[in-house]
Length: 274
Length: 249
Image 1 (spheres, rainbow over the protein chains, first blue to last red):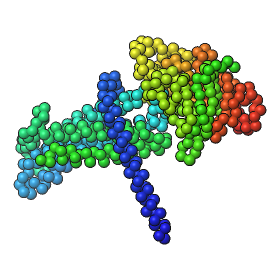
Image 2 (spheres, rainbow over the protein chains, first blue to last red; image 1 turned 90 degrees about the vertical axis):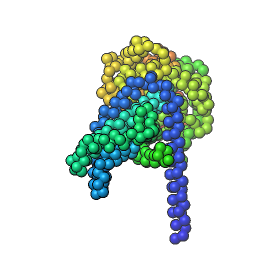
Image 3 (cartoon, chains in turn cyan, blue; image 1 turned 90 degrees about the horizontal axis):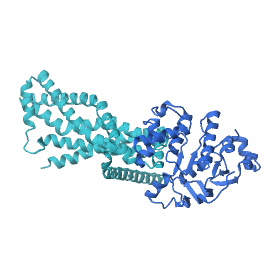
C-alpha cells in the first residue's frame, strides 16, 4: 500500500535523523571533553598517583599482548612480501619493507587497536559503572571535578603509553620478520638487519628520529588521545544499569576503532602526500 | 518537635517531566533551619527526584528551588560548589568510590576542596568515622564491608565538611532492623547535637518515629499530607491509612 510505504520511508528518515543527531551529540561531547582536559593539564601533578596507576594499567597489563601480536604481524608481513619478492629475486628488500611497514602503519595501528579493545573498554566500563551506581553523582555533590579526577589521568596515561608500546610493537615486529626471512626465505640476518637500518635513514629527522618512526609515534600519540576521550566520554554518559555499561563499552571500542582508521588516513596524507 | 524558624530550603511550584510522565507536579514546601523533614510515599512518586533538585543534580522544568538563599536554577558554578561544601548527601547505596579505601573515600572532599595537611585530614576522618560508630576501617575497601557499614561510611563522608544541611535518600534501605535503628538514632543525634537541617526519604515508620520533626507524603509528584509525626502515625488521613496498611513496619 502506498501509505504504508510512505510511512516506512518517513520512519527511516526519522531514524536516520535521530542517528545523525546522536552521532553529532556524541562527537560534540568527545571534543568538549578533550578541551576540558587540555584546560586541566596542570592538574596532572596533583593527580600523579592516579596517573601512575593508569600508566601501569595501560602498560604492564597490555605489553605482553602488544609483543605477541606485533611479533606475529612482523612475521606475516615478512612472509607475505617475501614470497612475492623471492619470485623476482628481490628478497634482500624484505628488511626494508617490514621495517617501514611496522614503523609507519602496522605498529601504531595494531597498538591503537589493542589499546582500544583492552584499556579503552576497561575505561568505559569502569566509568560507566561509576555512572550507574551514582558514584559520579556523588563526586558532583562532593564538588569533585570529574574531568580532573577521572579523565585527566586516563588521557595522559594513554597519550604517553601508546607511543611507548608502539616502539615495542615495531621492534618485535622487525625481529619477527627477521626470523621468518632467515628461516623460510633464506635471507641472512645480517642482510636483513642492514636493509632494515638503511630503510630508516631518511633525510627528514626530528629529535634524531627518522620520519617513518616519528610519524608513526605521532599517529600512536593521537590514537591514545582518541581512545581515552571516546572511552571516558562513553563511560560518563552511561545510564541504565548493567545494560547501559555494556552498551557504553561496546560503543567505546567500536567508535575508537572507526576514528583510529579515519584519523590514520588523514595523518598519512599529512605526512606523506608530497 | 523542634521549634522552626526561617526556611532554609524552599520548593516553589516545582514541575519535572520525564518523557510523557510528570514526576513533580507543582510541588511546594519549605524546610526551616534545624528542622528534619521526612518524605514518604509510594515508589515512583518523585521522592528521590525531589532531593536531586535540592542538591542541584536536576533542574526543574518550571518553578524554583531555593537552598540557603540560592536559586538552584540560576546559581553560578562557583557558588554551587561553595554551597555543596555546606550540604551533605547520603545516597541509597552509599555511592562510595569503589577503587578507593574507606578512609580515602571519607577524606576525598577535604583533599579536593581544602588545604588541610594529611595529619589534619586523618584526624577529621577518624573523628567522623567514630561518629558513625566505625573504627579501624580506614584501609578496608567498599567491596569488603557490609551494606550497613557502607551506608555509615557514606554518612561519614557526607558529614566530613561539617554541613548545615543533609539529604538522606532511604538511609534504611537494605539494612537489618538493628542497624536500621542505629542509623535512625544517628540521624536524630546529628540533628539535635549539631543543629543540622535534614530531608529524609524513607519507607519505614520506625524512621519517622525517631527522626521526623515533620512528615510529608508525596503522591503523583505533589503533597497529599503535610503533618506531624504523631498525626502521621495515627493515620487519621484516609490516604495515609491506606499507605501504611501496605508499608507499615
